[in-house]
Length: 404
Image (cartoon, rainbow, N blue to C red):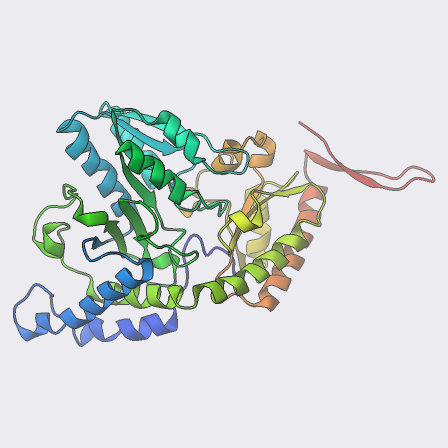
């Protein structure tokens, strides 16, 4: 059996075409773009091309900025901390609205801001795993400086109603940030069609290199820099430009968004094949409707099977999967997304996230089905919370869930 990667929401392999385009900028055209000699200026066309590709991929406007960062965690920190400086410390606001299921880079930053005296509202998700626009509207006050809500959830794949939330924020006159890491390259993101002021992105989520992200800023909105020390990126983000990574991100986003509907349709068919097969197991549940999720993702819970134990068995069969966010993968607490939608603690400990990519094959899906079924039988046979009723004379065995 070959290695099978089913954790593409955590990171993705670099597309060979991306790597090929990056290579000259490591040791051939290696100059610092800020240098005025030809070694530096020779990199400018490649950077400009990458920027053009980014603008095209998300349909950004001429008056908008796209600033390269080291990752989406930096982009998220930049927005939240700079809004704190610009609108709260130096303004008349004191409130931020977000959700309970954001990426740790949002939630941890919000906790930091609370320690500084900022009031933060953490909105719960509904039974589908999303926050509805009317809920956001109900919690915005005249003191709200920012609403920060992810475009798509990294654990469940659930797509949030960003267009409707954007309309609410526009009506209320509140800035709106969305962590778009799990959306760009997976679903259409058209920033001329939605009212979003800031969008965070990360290349390694759509087959680009690690260590490079971006922040979209609508209409060049004022945002105090997070990093100081130079005039890079028009003075908005200091630090020598990572030219190979920028080139790679530009190529990766172009590949990811070209023929997006066709590519994602193929991935969704494989995702559905895998999901439908695993749901044939008794006492299993998947969070959210297929049509309301990113096409590559599902979070499945198998009652009586600890998520970490399932990962161990899958890993022994050379399959990589996840119990949720890779940025919190060492935390053995119950899955936060499962808890947020109201699942009991036992079921929330059993969540397994499977996320596919355009490089996933039908053969790999079939191998995962077989391995997952085998692991479920083994782990349930030794589970303290799940037992198989032994047949009595003339009777048949049945399976049932037994609560702790």
